[in-house]
Length: 395
Ligand code: HEC
Ligand code: HEC
Ligand code: HEC
Ligand code: HEC
Ligand code: HEC
Image (cartoon, rainbow, N blue to C red; front, side):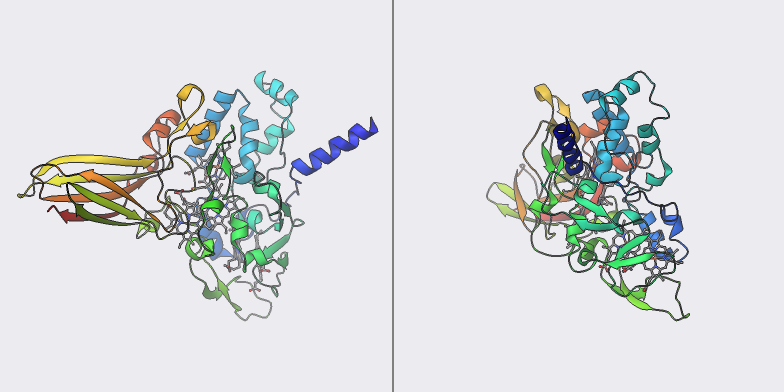
């Protein structure tokens, strides 16, 4: 019996994340605002701040879909997804007893329901997620992500890029992954995103080309400013700082120059080449994103003869080839993304009487199939973000 107990303990220890409760003084960004106002304001507009079921319709409906299809309670799915989306949650597992109680509507007031609905996690990936990471276990199995891959600092100790920072409000500690090797921090979550069936639909770490720091593009170049408006002797302490906007696919400005387009005549065809100078694939990140090529054929008067649309997206299927969301997928279609620092060339036929062809490249956050399955309503999911366009005279 004793042997069995010890065995159980080690198993729970090595598979479950260790929770460190965050003291109320540090829990949310309003507590940091007095001294780090600029940073708090920048972060508020980021999608890290929206990583919670109340604030991201796509995320919420994806969890509801998983819960319906797996017949697991919604709260246990929320806990699974919290590993990366809400890693300061205080409950990391649900039991069979909980599942039964949840089905019978008797789970209200339970530890699990309280943890899932607690205000302390509704800011998603907030300050005390990144700045309370104390250790990153790169040696762990690559499936372990988010809270299962890190150890937290004691509540009230902020990890940061400086080795000489002093604050009256909190302790500070320097770690290399805050300045020298920041990609390690990003890859805690931006890697090995997998479905409930074990299909890895995104792996930014694997596809990444080169050593460039994610923060160079997603937190902007280093600039000179104060890190905190509070100072001990009234003098401004100028530091190198970065923007906390973490802008990505949801921001039109990020798409300017993200991809380039070139076309050429080739016998009876036109070759369209999409080149990706970025170090990760595009689309990348979350599965179900879509690139769209709109092709317009015009005659010598400039009148439209024909149009064509080509979609570059990945389709997901669950059992018996039924369409699925990335998170319920058993299989996926061929990867249609433009590889990191690479390109893809598509061949399109010339149509008789064509004198010129316009090609327009744009992007959608979610393809129509997944949008339909989840019944996404917010206009952002239908929006077509323009990337670039070009025209060619047909020879
Ligand atoms: C009363 C003012 C005050 C409050 C409130 C405050 N800080 Fe700070 N913080 C500072 C000062 C001062 C520094 C040091 C700045 C410097 O040395 O340039 C600092 C530094 C930091 C650093 C950099 C540490 C390093 O070693 O590189 C981080 C990260 C940080 N704070 C996070 C937070 C977070 C998160 C909160 C909210 C939970 C918070 N701070 C609340 C004053 C404050
Ligand atoms: C604790 C896990 C975690 C860590 C650590 C993390 N991210 Fe994220 N990141 C997420 C999640 C989850 C989302 C999606 C949130 C949503 O859309 O609801 C996201 C979204 C993003 C986006 C997309 C934003 C958009 O507008 O489309 C970018 C860019 C990004 N993160 C960059 C970074 C960078 C750079 C780092 C490292 C400094 C980092 N992340 C660290 C979990 C994390
Ligand atoms: C996704 C991870 C992530 C989140 C969330 C995050 N930070 Fe940071 N923060 C970083 C990284 C990485 C750096 C180091 C940037 C550099 O200098 O290369 C940094 C730097 C800082 C610094 C030093 C000054 C600066 O601007 O570089 C302070 C202070 C700070 N963060 C406070 C905060 C506060 C307050 C919040 C919440 C509103 C927050 N951070 C949210 C990753 C994060
Ligand atoms: C050279 C600049 C550059 C670097 C370095 C870079 N990115 Fe990006 N990233 C972009 C651009 C441009 C986009 C916008 C196009 C897009 O959304 O695919 C983007 C988009 C994203 C998105 C949203 C993708 C989507 O379609 O949902 C995520 C997430 C992201 N980056 C994370 C990272 C992480 C993590 C790293 C480091 C491992 C990184 N990026 C390094 C330029 C960069
Ligand atoms: C391995 C860490 C990880 C886990 C676990 C995880 N996610 Fe994510 N998720 C991410 C990251 C990182 C992003 C941001 C990628 C991007 O923007 O391209 C993201 C983005 C998303 C998005 C896109 C949101 C948007 O606004 O476009 C949805 C939807 C989503 N996740 C659903 C889920 C669901 C449902 C679960 C649980 C079944 C889950 N995720 C579990 C890391 C994770």
